[in-house]
Image (cartoon, rainbow, N blue to C red; front, side, top):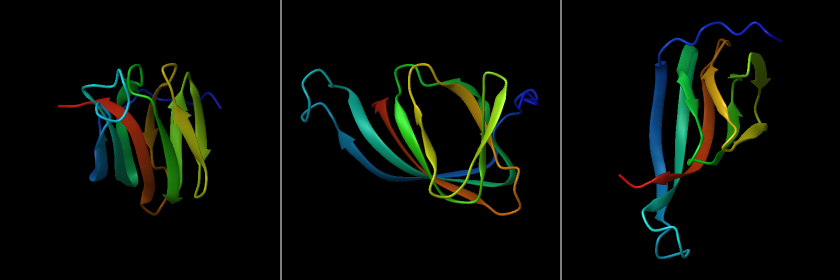
Length: 114
């Protein structure tokens, strides 16, 4: 599917931090990094943008409810409950909810501590 429009800015998205683990004391070489788990809700018509990369921020996503459209390289892919995707250094994308109910995901990634 090559119907990717330009990516609008983020709207209709709420993010709740669920947990973090400081990875420095856990794994040699991970000082200044943390494992983070978030609950992300994208309202109908909502967008999680702008286009962003996961270079230096790998993660995984799991869909709990609704459908999330993931836009990568001109291709739009829909993911529903029970599905998910990896986000590695090659991932550059943005997300939207084209559905009629809120889309809810669990997002787990490794980030630099702020």
